[in-house]
Length: 134
Image 1: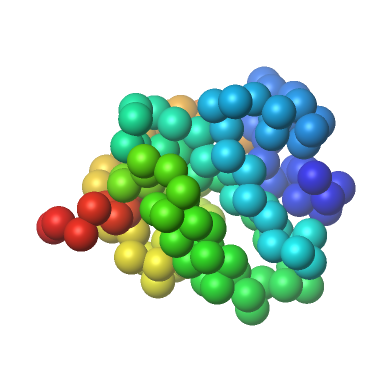
Image 2: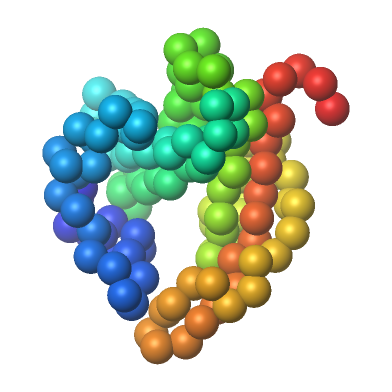
């Protein structure tokens, strides 16, 4: 993982595992564009419902929606995934807007679950149904 992304993907109480350890798990799907300037990690919650974690370097933010759509399309074509969950930290308006642009809908708020700077903050739960049904 690029060092400039690291501070944005950890909380106060966890240490991020080196990327090779994360992607070597048989339960995790890690997708990266050929440019290596972004990543999308999918972790299954259930057979068809997965959670996404991702990041894009600042220099490539204009490609964020393209990268996200490509990753979602790959998951739909290559895995049983038909629902994707995204937990958006309170105040992260860029990720909230990106998720909305990709078709995610706000389904709720998980209160005081994200430790940041010694404080427990809320996260917005977003969901994308890719089954073709609404």
